[in-house]
Length: 497
Image 1 (cartoon, rainbow, N blue to C red):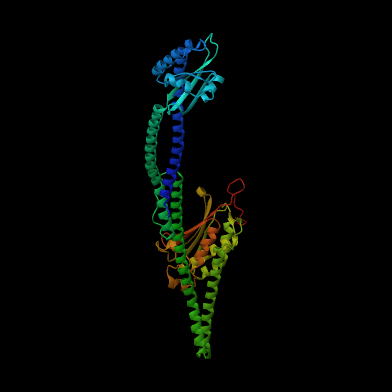
Image 2: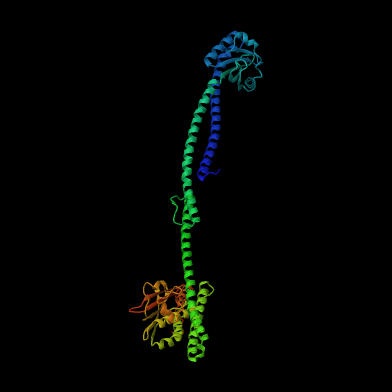
């Protein structure tokens, strides 16, 4: 049989309370009994002292007058509401208020009675026991009396029945027991409500945990308290949020992966299908016609080059994304980067009669990075600008420092076809093309801008695209400016500045 945590807390609390009440009750009952006995002894001692004072004149003659002593003992017993006994030092009973005169000589010697022996030794003695004479349970208190001029000491003993005392003790214990019972009942109710208040969040935590295990991340736990349960609830909520974000990211990555596989398959299939078709055409007889064969072979070569370029870009992008490419961190002047890139792009631009312009201030601070990789970034951007800008267009490269965030901004603007605003956030995705047919026709792999984005971000920078006024596109790169050890931006070290 298994109990819920609520009942475990309730029963555990009740058990602790019950044990506490039992211990406290036992101590209280014992304290009450001892207190009442102490009060009874105090009262009995006062009565015994008064009785001894009243009997003292009769104890001076030796032997004392037994008839007068018996009469006085009976009177004192009536007034003191107790049994009065007079005993000599040898233990012989001289008078007893509870017995007749004839019965006194028949009493046994009392010298060895505990209270008498103690009184003879120390002056006072007490004992609680059942009387052999009366059969009642009595509280005895004996006092040694030595009257001035007396030849021997005597013992005056008073005995009080414990019936009234025990009845009073029982009444007090019963009242205390009722109080403890009420306290236990109240504790039981409080324990249940406290346990319910403590375990309700735990029950909700258990429900949410089961839902998390089942893949549901919608429900959250109310966490109003600042105790351990509240901390646990907030932690579980944070974990659920994190898992929700992670699973969303995993799903997005899975979608990206599927799209990537589909795009790679499509990009590879197109040149392979073309190569296969023209090879089959050659085998079917086109090889016997030199002009046709040459044309087909040129197409096969072009598609092979495209396939090789695609594989190289895929390999390079994979290496960058996996972190296997380490970027150098050296001072790089962007003027050198621009001049190196223009030297390789200029022949293609001149063929399409493009106007190339550059605006870079001579005091432009350097950036920290890998010059060859930055040349690759600018080459990809300028290559796209040349491809997608009609003949006679303009391509402009500029750079400037951005003081507010201590970066260097490099821009490549063109007067080409432009990129619609809806497509601009996605142009840096792998294989994303604004115009797929035109991009393939111009020999693009769809990976150039993805490589640009990874290289720029690997340098701690940012890249985005904007519309160019009045037409075309404007690609913007921001890279952190190089700082000296004191934190100041270093001046430019371009050798051509």
